[in-house]
View (cartoon, rainbow, N blue to C red):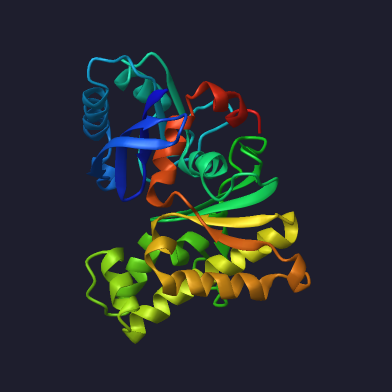
Length: 299
């Protein structure tokens, strides 16, 4: 079954033709996600036009995974990075015979459950480290949504600063790509992008390594906290940063291991997402695949 999948991320948006039976991506179009003030109606119109062009003459369903909170009814309920509403998406994709929308982290986790390193698992935890940070608790291929559909906000959780005069920062502010870049520039590093920061860290630049390794370590401690509470079989880490940065991944792995209180044989294994950067796109397509649709809304 061919579906148009759309993975709307904080830094890039990928539109692709996906075979949901085999999880194969046939063709893709990649767009830079503009700054929030420019990511409104015009950008949505462009994404819809690219999706329609990929479908060619076929009437294909569309699945959208978006880097925002989506409630249990499938309504977008935040505008942290991309200010689209569900009604606006329905209007933009009116040419599609079916449209399904969910948070990108849940879509990516379902893709890993179907075709990646989450296949065959029972109770497990998925986290995504990209421009932002998000997480989801999984039971096999079914995400836990929470009462309001917001059981994904690991990155938005605040950390308490030691100085009471300062505003608390979130996990995302330190461990996410946007936060890493901001901290690097504040430290005097002239880096144009997260990719450039990671490249400097992997090349041995001491200041870059401190920022990247520290970001991974903070995420590892946060995942350790969740693992101690939830006792998952496995922790799966996806997103562009862990796959691009051994320094970030190593920092995350060490901190996770150090944060777990159970004896070593009982600790959950940390796995890197098997589908790499395609997990979000494949998962977006699976949102409308008949074999997965009931599962996604059953959490």
